[in-house]
Length: 263
Ligand code: SAH
Image (cartoon, rainbow, N blue to C red; front, side, top):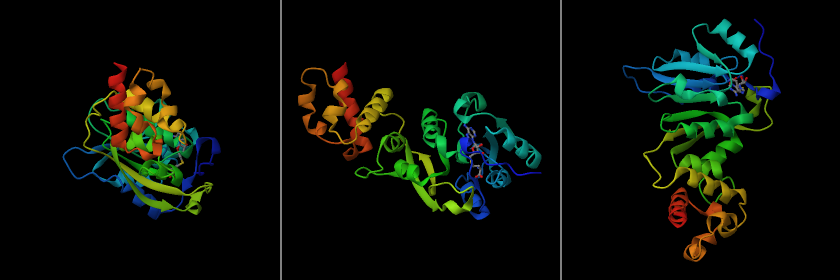
């Protein structure tokens, strides 16, 4: 059977290195229990990761693939695979997994990698672990600590709920066709936090507004949240900072204080 022809519009870069594929598949390795851990693979392509995931007796695998040609290929080569033809971003995960935790893995389509992580965040209480390969630059953003150039919206929103590991870097020449950028494998594991102690939507809005003008002091970028008389004065000290200087904890505290001013 013919191989799938790589399509740029779908972010298709097929991994050729089986050693790396196996290492990625092993980033989700649930400990044995009576029930197999449900794992969703996004964008299996020609199944280079899938083959190892299917062999893991602790994993109950489902895959979602948007590309018709890849779906035909996968059905031929992996008839045992539970496969959904469709767009992960449109998939109703509560329907697929009505209850309980599940993991997410993939050598992800790079053109939608940020959106994939925002969707994982929407289901954070159902997804204890998410791992896989993305552009190195996005991996750095996700894992970045405060004070770094890469520190931004994704870093704060994800790190509020997940511990992030930057596992290893992958060279472009192990793909067909090679992407323009280097890649990296990351793992997100849900931390112990059960609540922020403030409004989650407000937290997101504040983080986004802060980084949308990342060179400006918070007093400027957050002006829409600071209209109550006395508010700017009380928060004067923190408002002279720039967003990259604030830790996740400090963003949470700032949200709590702004929330109390809004009420
Ligand atoms: N995992 C394979 C393919 C990686 S390329 C490998 O390592 O070789 C990314 C894959 O994601 C492609 O197969 C592409 O068709 C698929 N894809 C792109 N957008 C998608 C989406 N919105 N939902 C599901 N799959 C998608």
